[in-house]
Structures are given as structure tokens and as C-alpha cells.
Amino acid sequence: MKYNFIIIFIAVFIVSSMPNVMAEYRLLCLERAETVRFSLCNSHIPDRSCDSDFGCQFCTNMISEGVYCPTSVNVCNSLGLGCSYLANRTVDTQPPILSIISPISMHNYNSRSILFDLLLNELGDIYYLDNLNGRGRWSRVCSNCVEYAGRRSFNEGNNSITFRASDGLGNTRYVNLSFFIDSKKPRIIKTIPSNGFTDGTFFVTFKEDNPALLILHYGNLLVGYRNIELDLSLCVENLGKTYCNTEVNLIDYDGQEIEYWFNLTDISGFSHASRRLDVDVDVTYPNIVDLDFEVIGGFVNFNMLIEEENLDSVDYMDNSELRPRWRTLCSRLNDGRCIARKSFSNGNHNLDMQVRDEAGNSATENINFVV
Image (cartoon, rainbow, N blue to C red; front, side, top):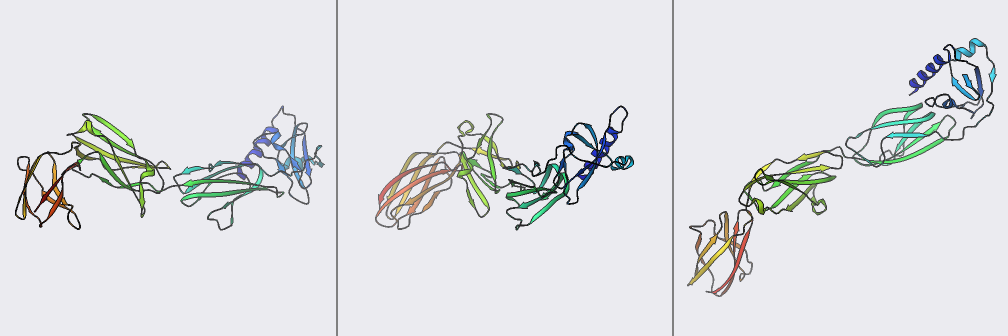
């Protein structure tokens, strides 16, 4: 910034005034577009170009042939120095070099407030253009400066900007860069199962525009904890929500209780973990040991022997109907048996018999009879 530039000038003046340092003070007179390379004296001091049609004057301390350090104008005034001219005059036709420390091109940011950290190798003006949302207007960053540090706000998502750096002679350089902003934290809305049993199938619903990583954690202290990364490309997005599911092999946990949770991370590094839930594991399919039925008039008596500790229901579907649908035969077992009586219309009947447990495992058989 210009204050740092002034401080550098003062520091150089103090050094040049110290004893045992030979000084040859000169009042350099430059014509328009001529440049004095103060960077040869100190790399931290920018070169100066004359940007006036009436010429420019710089009070200097020549420490060696062709190497000039800036010093206070009062020194030249007190010595009554007249104009000196550069031995090898150079005309500035090069645009300033703009070093962009921040923002970083192609970087993902988790804040809409973006740091501008910029450096110029000579005094100049810096502007930027928001190529996507700036409506074609250039915004000033700093004037007559060699460095700048400050923040600007940008929109969520993709951003493309152009920096313009010009020196006093109108030499101009353009630098383009793009970056991405995702400042909204991800949020897991729902997980299934929420209680009861699982056969290894898990569901999750979340809200996040830019998900990067979704991991299911599961297990217990007895067998241990494991995790699996979900393939986000297989998830389904609808109305701002994303739905995902996965299946894991829980045979090692069969008959035990496990806890599980999901962890979602977005491209900016924000993450959210769902609530940890405890569920029982049942990966054993029901077993229909025996299926007896008897047709008596318009009724059928069913007597099924079933092996299943966590029965959900025993159902049947009559495929002979115009619109077949599942109907419940039994919702619980008595001594391992489902005993029920149902009425049917006259004619041939083709039934699918299904036994489901609370984890979603099922076993089916097919029967035929005539009423």
C-alpha cells in the first residue's frame, strides 16, 4: 500500500544518511515514459515511470553506477542540485506484473467473502470485473498502489473474474481466474431404519448442492466397527433433496444389535453426521417348514409351520383375480404356526404365499386349488 511505499523511502533515506556510506545525490529528471529502476537498489522498492507530459523529478542517492536509491526531496533542495539525466534512458512500454496470491484459481472456497491479496512490481491501479455477475462494470481495487489486501463478496457457485492492472503510462495487463464458492453446510434430513431391524439395507436423505463424500458407519463393540463409501452418482435428486441407499453384508452381526450413522462432506470441507441409531440385525430368511391347506366349500383352511423369530406378517396374493394384491393371512404365529380360514370364489386359484420378517427378509411359495 502507499503507506508502505513511503516507509520504504524513509528507510532508504536514513540508510543513505548514515556515516561511512558514500553518497552521490542526484536530482533525476525524466521525460514521459522514462523509468528509473529503483528495484536495482532494493528489490522491495518498485520502479518509477514518469507519467507526466511535463516531466518528473526524483531525488536519488546513486550508490553505484546506474543504481539509484530514492531519498528525500529535501536533500536535493538543500544541495541546490540541478537536473541529471539517465545515462541509458529506457522507455516503459511494459505493463505492470500483477502477482495474485489470493484468490487461487480453480480453488473451492467455503465463504462468500474472498480475500484479494495482490502485488504489483510498480505503482499502478488495479480493477476487477465479475464476468458472471458484474454487469460489465469494472470495480476499483486500489489506485497508485503496489500491494493490496482486502475482501470482496461473491455469489455461491462458479465465479469468473478478470483483474486489470495499469501503470501511469497506460500500460495494462489482464489476468483471468475462476473459483467456486460453497458456503452452505450440508444437512442430513432422514435415515432409515430409524428403529427395529435391518437386513443390511440403509437409506439416507440429505440437502446439499455439492456433495463430495458420503460414508455409512456401522458396527458394535463385539464384532467391531466398519464403514462404506456410497456412490453418489447412484443417488437421486428431487426438489432440492437427495436420496441414497446402500446394502452391506451384516452376516457377522446376525442376531446382534448395531449402531449406525451417516457422515456427509461437501466440496468445501463442511461435513454433517446423522444421529447415531441402534437397530437389531436379522439377515436370516424365514423358513416355511410345511404348508397345508384344505378346501371346504367356499373356504380354504391354511395351516403353515414357519421358522421365524421376528415375524412381520404372512401374506397371500391371488393371481387369479383381475387386480391381484397382497392380503394378510397372519400377523403372528402360535407355536410357530399360522392357522387361518379364508373364503374364495368358485373356480381355479393360483396363490403366492409370502412370509416376511421385520428386517424385510422374505420367503415365498406357490399353491393352486379349485373352489
